[in-house]
Image 1 (cartoon, rainbow, N blue to C red):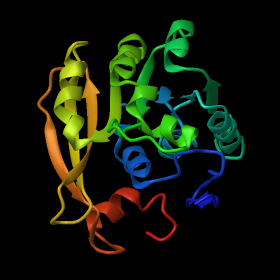
Image 2: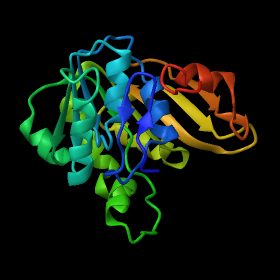
Image 3: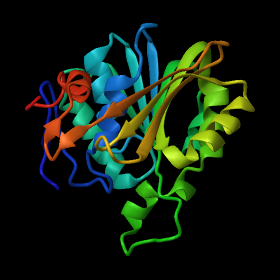
Image 4: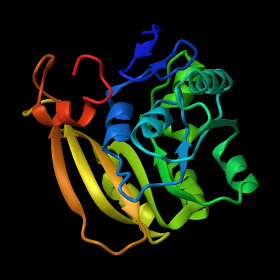
Length: 237
């Protein structure tokens, strides 16, 4: 798991990060809309920097800023940015989300977040991994507070969360007048339950479009939808 993860246009070192490259991050980075041609992008809780790197590949955004609180993950993210083809557009800040909100006056056209989940009551012996995986390290309320302060009026906010948190999160977002614009429900295979919700919010009052993505029909037998979404990134797609 500590081996570098090679994508088509960049490589991500992950040995210093508690949370390794996973399907969640790649899905969110590939699915998030860039139709509004964002200039300023913010990646909340960047980990390896995978989301920022994917958006650098997909868009012409000139300022892609990532925030990471964990020391080792921050170092690794900064180094992944430095070694990428887009190092002049990528910046990583070593700060907590609330510190960042206090210090920054900018607004962002796109805010993206793959937050720590697993708010269940188990913890492991690995503090760093727990910090990356547990909601208490970055409560959803903090994320919404940051978006309220940092998202441009016409901006988009994109997040991936467990399906069981979807209704609560949409309600929380509504307290700052954010409305879901697109929702993608993700299943591992056709017969499994929906495990993840990718939600894109905006301040505009639009109808919500809801779609479903199935990742594979059998082990390593990926669906065409999943291939179409991720083929610009994964080497073997």
